[in-house]
Image (cartoon, rainbow, N blue to C red; front, top):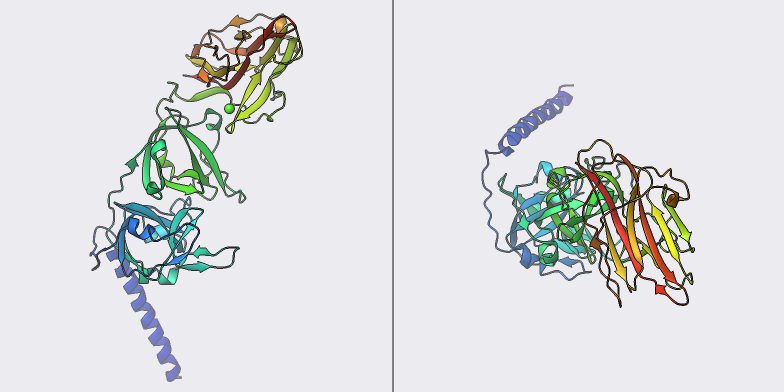
Length: 446
Ligand SMILES: [Ca+2]
């Protein structure tokens, strides 16, 4: 009997010692009490990445050490089983086979990596450092580093190092910025997206949502958010601000990933000077391309002739389009009317849209507002006020670029319809067949 008790006591003692050790170790691991590891780096992240050829998975033979600061971790869930580190020469993603990596490798932590024996690969041109080759797919892929091997390769250094983003413009982004923390000034979501959430919590396929971010100079870039991020169901911010994010690529697509919503403080005035209360917007994204515009609540009707507004698409952007060309009618007059718009109780209400003309030979586009129209099929029976929209014209042998109508102050109104009225001709004698394109119809309130 005693012989059996001894091992029991032995294990209990070991357990107690173990707990004590874990407690002590935990205490010593917490900042600021920290002893720097006895290791120095002798290789840069840029040098490491230069060893990689896209599409390949390579064993790293260099007996070197890189040093980086963690600039993105998996705390919010937007990064999965990976962290991103940076030195002054570049950034790289580490593929690590464990959850809650942020508990050991939080943003701001310095880490050293002994790279010999690790593997380089890329996820559709996004370079990663991992632990092996995964041959289960159609092509060899990078396998993550097993959790049991972390401490063999990764040496943890100091905490709370300053992590400052590099300020860049979208047009300057290239592969040298891969996996770096960057900042792009004055970004905003599309007005049609401001009512949406960062991602779709609970949806597993696809597992992420892409949004297009725009800057005030018109540049655009994709922001990709995981449905597993803890901020997935939060609303996108409506205003404008500077985004901080990890720059990534997926093939030739440039994509940003935020660490959490603190990276999108879009609380300033939008590029058009509004504060982002979108009362009405239409960018024609949901209209079937090539079909007559038939959006819910909209009217698209010919007063004379039979030409209608159609949805066209160029370079992935959909818009409304109309032309009398080849219609054969002596007189064309066509109305496209919004649904009833409730402008609410804002003191300042601004209406704008974009438009372009093509092969201009004298047809007209005019924009009107009505408060007595009843929403029936004959808008011309009601009272309409002409709005002072700037309409593109004079492109007689090509298409012009979209221009802004200008901001029209409609603060005096509370419930309105807006009509886009095209007048042209394609009879035997007179040709007025100018094409007009209309997009980004928007009303904001302050
Ligand atoms: Ca559009």
